[in-house]
Amino acid sequence: MLLNSRKNNIVVGYFLIYLIIGVFDAFFMLYIPLYYSSILRVNRTELAFIQLLSYLALFSAPLLAFIYDNHIKKEKQAKLFLLLSLIPLCASFLIFVFFKHILALYGVFAFLSIVSKTLVRTGTTSKYLDFVEEAEDSHEYTDRKMKIIVSTNSASSVGFLLVSFVFNFFVFNITSLTSWNLFFALGWVFSIPIMILTFLFVKRIKFLKSAEGKNSENIRNKRNKLSVTQILIMGIIYIAIFLSYSESLTFFPRSEWIYDKFTENSFRVYSSLYFVFILIGMVGYYLSSVIEQKTSNMTSILFISICLYSPIMLLMTVSNFTMFMVLESILTIIASILSLTYISYVTDFSIKCKHKTFTYQLLATPSSIASLIFVPLGTYLSDNNRYENLVVISFFLFIISGVLLLIVLFLRRKGKNRILLPQERELTTM
Image 1 (cartoon, helix red, strand yellow):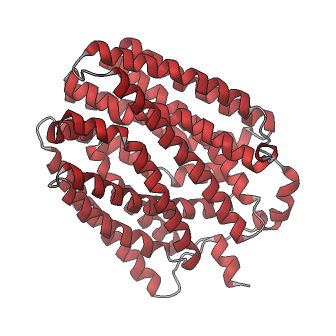
Image 2 (cartoon, rainbow, N blue to C red; image 1 turned 60 degrees about the vertical axis):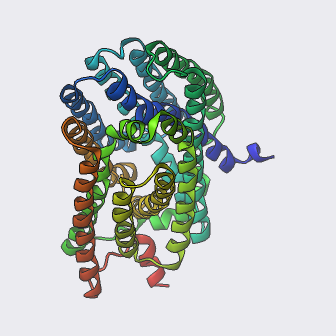
């Protein structure tokens, strides 16, 4: 009886929570950009400014995590925090449904949506770290990490799939405002049953299990001080990861570019199969977990991933649609390896800190800073620059990222300055 298992209940709970996020992310990432750029043809300078303001909400993550670590201690508090955090996500989309033609109110929707997802991820991150920390050996540790990662990404793929079905079924004429209005309204309506199911299921999950925490009490009490050089290396890696998110420059104009370059039918195929890219990403997660078990040199993994990613990113701009889909699949795998490698580092490091949720969210901010800078910048530049030019800019930033990682590799090869994660330190003393 799978659902009688606490661990499986947690995994299913994560699936339902991220299914809701996946549904709204599908609108936010694929359909709303196309709607504003190709259907309404809004002023991109104004939109870029509104995006800049709304993406400031991303910086609430570390603060919310710090508050969470200090005030959310009980099971009931954790559940209430998670469930209440989902309400603004659903409510904010209703603002968009009724007032999507007003850019300022789109900004309100985007801001509330980001805050809501940040709140949800703060709660799920804390429980994820607790869940991983309960592991009694390295095999179970990796297994728990992968279960949550597979669950959340599977949920995202299902969310994108459901929305693509609604789009293809109701939007026959992609230039019809009536069809788009119906599509957005039905998207909100379909999210309600998922929300109710999530509320009912999460209420029965037991997130906290204090008895299991005793086995790792000694580990939690260990504190490993980092030298100035080690902190410098962490800072360099952080900047390199931030630059690797420079592809966010193409976030807003991407849907329009696919629609214009490959025709409407190709965009329909792309949006319908977007869930496949998320599933393909799990191949990358699996490969990353295998690599992680065989080597602890994460910097090399990051460097190789960036070296492979950047030239393929350029090739996509000169490919036909079939080759574009193939290259997109390859990039998804590489991006998954890059992402999980960094997430694994952040996870291993955070669970040894006093304020582990705060530490995790702080180290996870490269994507937030990149979104704040590159998404509005890409939207603004796309008004007078071709999509291909934005990719070239991103390509050069990837090169800088690779150079920074080479510097880290050089420092580590000097011998004594290599960062050892808490987990690695224990292995070296056995």
